[in-house]
Picture 1 (cartoon, one colour):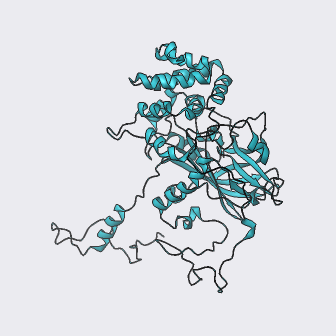
Picture 2 (cartoon, one colour):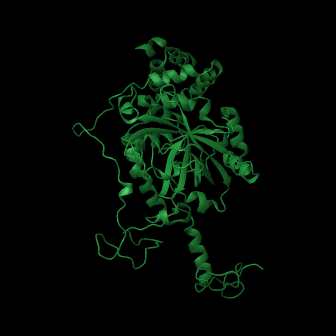
Picture 3 (cartoon, helix red, strand yellow):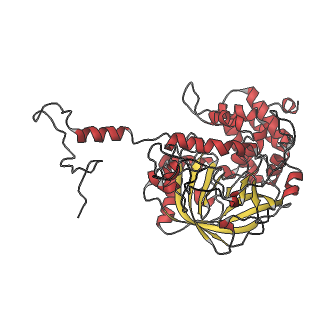
Length: 481
């Protein structure tokens, strides 16, 4: 038997189709509190959209540790071969709004929340191992350039390329994005990366630097811009549909989890700055080490509860895992939690999808929709048997040096790795890369931007820059200046 309809306060609701009126043809009565409640609640259904990564799909699953990593970290989820940890994941686009076609070329978000015995651990990465900028001060400007023109409210290739052409640190990521992997055929067939360098600490206090890699066991598959445009014209939720349908049909997607591990001093001395997210660490120097695998086996039962309210932050770290000095990561430690407080409220961690497995004990109180810990003491220190500090979670000391200041990165070689990426591509991949760049950089009439960006490509690799110049009809002598 169906449940009886009620108001929000639980009173029986007799009629959900006809408002109270003064007579059959009369005006609606203000006393119809059920009508007022329904309209008022409807007006408040929507919450602020994510300022970035607004369009997304999610699922739940489980991570299984296949290789014990206790030699490198005391983190619970990476200790004890065979251990399983539940997780939630969200794939997304960076720039588009919630209703934007999800097959448009863009970096894809790849965010994982592990529900560990020591609290939630979030790896908030992308489907690329690098990023466009390496300083949080430039992040808002970067995102503005990828979104809509404030004058026309239209997407603007000129804005995108204008920012990139004046930001040489972006050339590595631009090369990656304009290549084949900038358009994954599905969320199931793309790799993921933690992107930043993180710190692992073992039970003896030894420190290692790590980078996360998630390799799709479905194999990497991409689509051309033409295929992506066709898919978008038929279904703006193409990638979301693909993920949901696969899980619904029990074709559960999975990823192998790997890390690159650098001993502490070797990371400090590495030729490329491992704390600069525009750069990678060579697999030749530090090969991938398998950690485990995760499988997605459960679709959302309610999208709003399980995906829209799902909140990630790089600051959600557990004992044995710490932040590195990566500037962009340091900025994200604040920005993500602050964004969720604005979007979901100060107590968003209490929402079902964000709630940790272990009990929460602290001195934070009240606010909207708070389970406020009742009559427990709300100050510290105290003599009331309140929550006490856990030395197990202490962070490791970090040696610092130098005077305070707004510094440029000491390693400003933004071209070597971009050139190496270009040279790794097959001739067919290079052809598609040049075509994609031409379609974007050549879609507007701004000679200065075209020259500036092509100079970046030329510095990465002369053949690369020459081919772009030829495709755009630019004078190579001007590019070489």
